[in-house]
Image 1: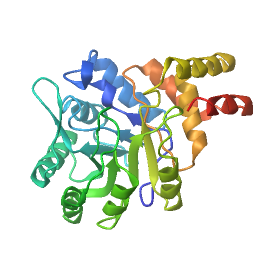
Image 2: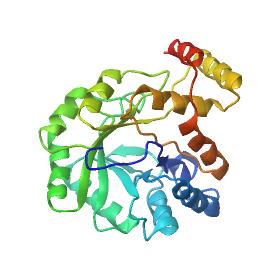
Image 3: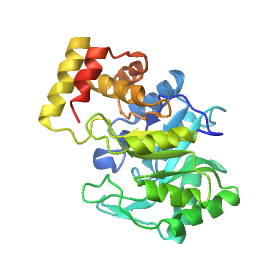
Length: 278
């Protein structure tokens, strides 16, 4: 990740919040244990957002891990807030973004944020890029970077044009989009970012699968004697060296299963079968 180097297997904190990513966790002690176990297992990249909860995951991260290990990088997102009913609301006016950055600083308990991703799109499915200029929004974050409140910048739910527009304003170290074995629209973007030494962080590794696609994944996993999620994660790591993962869970047991995917080598016949999923 340019000057932002992390292990390829990270952790996404989204599932630590309550149902619908809203409110407190079902099991507070287990949530704290997940975070501490992740770091013990070698995770040095935690993905979060102050709108998870809201504030819940950031406050859990601070409780569990502060003072933070020197090598730990916490990546957060801005561009959304939550309504009183838990609705996900766009909030990308420059002043709103500044307020969100300061809120992340407070809830994480840091003087500067390691990486801030501007979350842009959404679309009808909630996870796809929406074309349009992001210069004003990204420029506001670039100003905060110059002020020393943000160390690195990234993007989330964007297309290639928006990536290029942002890069003309300030460097980016990561792009976080929806990509998995069944949803492969970003392969060209992944390659382009890889040539530039920029990390690509796919979210929702099992999202958007049809029953037929899920059946293929299940068959491959059964044949290998592992969980489908492990196969999906191993497939992502196989695709490109600049892919870094942030699988999320609220269970220590599931966390350990996800981390084991980093050492899972998919044989040629499994890769060939998975190629037919998309």
